[in-house]
Length: 279
Image 1 (tube, rainbow, N blue to C red):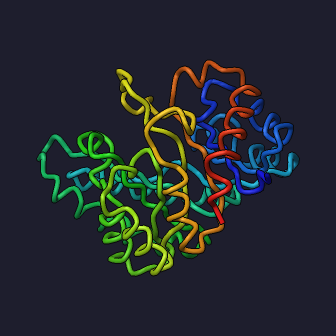
Image 2 (image 1 turned 45 degrees about the horizontal axis):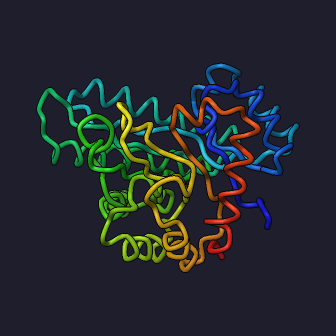
């Protein structure tokens, strides 16, 4: 089965130097990579783009923008400037989308409703810059347990409300199975995203138990946990989505695997649990 649509998010192999990961991907038959801004900091934009081009790799996404919930005006202005830089980095790398994590509740006011309003205002403020750069903004809802510190946006519907209010076709959502598999309205919200042209990215990994001490690191190889990948992939495929399917795993055991072993496991699970249902 073809791996043409399989992408590997750089943090799936977080402890592997990015240069080594990039070289390992073509050897594993994988042609796309999701990069992080820390990779830009380490290698520089020009060198990172050169390496991906030389290896024939597509960049599926850049992580991450967002964190727009600060209550202080100076902090919000700084965040907007940083997001504009992130958009420019995505464009320079040839990444079609910048993944956006909203940011958590500000302890200065503990106002979650206000935080969500600030996210909407911030996204609207940078949407035009994204359009001009030819980059989309993929708002990523995170599981509600991360609302305090990472994302006050927990569902695809919430993310779509913000995307639609931005008044720009450049703003949409990413469906990340780890964060949204539990949502009883998942199928409806995926259909809503597609109907408005805002289904921009699809990321997969499993929900493992017991949760790690850092719950963010409880993501697992597809098939190791509780998520029904055939079902969710069918939902996404039914909308006509034919973009990259990016594997994004944060797990210390996975990071301990040799990169070749990790990529082989990912490819085998993808061929079994995802690709046959992806359209």
